[in-house]
Amino acid sequence: MSIQVNANAPAVVTLSAKKRRARGDGGLRFDARRQLWIATVPRPGQSHRTFYGKTQAEAISKRDAYKADLASGRIADSLVAEGVGDLPRNPTVGEWLDYWLEQEIKPRYNAAGERESGKQPTTYVNYRFQIHKHILSRPLARVRLDKLRVADVETWWESMRRAKVGGPTAYKAISILNGAVSRAIRRRDVTSLLMNPVATFGADDRVRKPRPVKKLAPTPEGTLALFEAARGERLELVLHLGLRLGLRRQELLALRFGDFDLARGQLTIRRRVNRIRGMGIFVRGGAKMQDDSAEQVVPISNPERWAQLLEEHRSRISHFAAANKKTWTGPEPTAAWAWVFPNKFGEPTDPNEVLRWFKVIAIRAGQPDKTLHGLRHDAASLGIEAGMSLWEVSKLLCHADTTTTENVYGHITGAHETRLFSRVDSALDAMLVDAAAS
Image 1: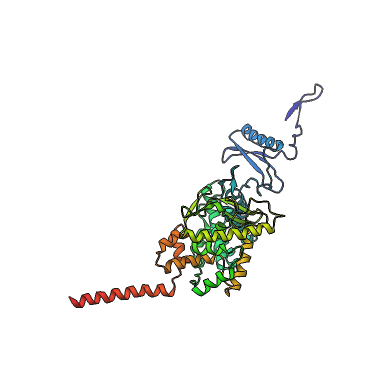
Image 2 (image 1 turned 45 degrees about the horizontal axis):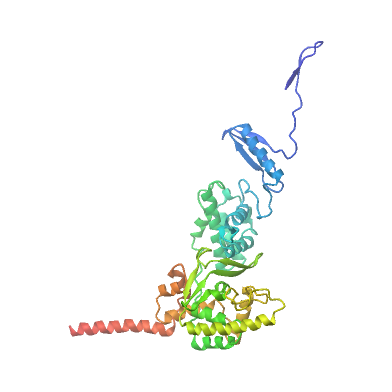
């Protein structure tokens, strides 16, 4: 407001036009309740970027510094690169899941290839699929996180049941959602929620963890048929590593010849191979259930037999490399640093290719329902039948505890079950004899 004085006329008061901020400058206001100045910057397609200050100058200074960083390219405030920008204020369930997935779950590696943050890449891919398939595609994703109620979770759960989503898949989806909401509550800067409605609904009898499907114990005839079907095949060694050592597919496909130390009678698991959507064939360090830098030593019994198996395998790989010499770019096929199961380029074989190969072997052996991972089940069952305890089998298969071993791999065969009842029967007879004698 300004006052203009005319010498020849009475004094009048006029209001000068208020200067309008340029488009994109954002807003500035004082929040009397919180006693804070709030400056905002609009962002196309997203919520406003907000800055707080105890004084007007402080809020403006933060806003201007942010705009300068945007102009210089130091930061990129858009849904690019990592898949999501800054978390919007008062986010919806979907916005928080996007942020949580890309900023807290997605693995990040340093220059040495070691994982510094996030979860394993296979876990990230699995979470991303579940979130996009079963949560972001449903109305629940549009509910504001601080307005999320048990009824919203119930509606979402029932919609999955009506869509005939399988029990294990639905349970996995609600477990992921529960973890994401719990994390938002713990952070305190994301939502005003104090109670997790997903966990509350999860306590309902309708949400039950699926029981593991127990596999049939191996039979001598079936196991022999598998070995006969794979005899002479380039990947025959896969069966021995799976049945004799209980190795996982991702572990055995990441082996190099130098990982075998027959003089010491041991095999060292140093890395794993996975096919990950968007990343292709991915080799990562470390053994499963351990840090990426941790190694796992597997004792090898009967080194003479393994020496023969490896010699036969080296011969098959040498012939395979010679047949693909035009494409082979890897090391000498039998060198210590060469891959035990290479593809035609000398690189690790695609895990999906091994699955397809085993499917052919299983059909040839008259066991079309047999899976490659089922070899681990067989190794556990053979150990139990041989008299090993669940704890011992758990150590053999490198489980975190015996629960998984008992629920999934502890398939007691008829012969072992007979021995167990026989021990009880004999103990009872002995007790009765002693009682009669006294």
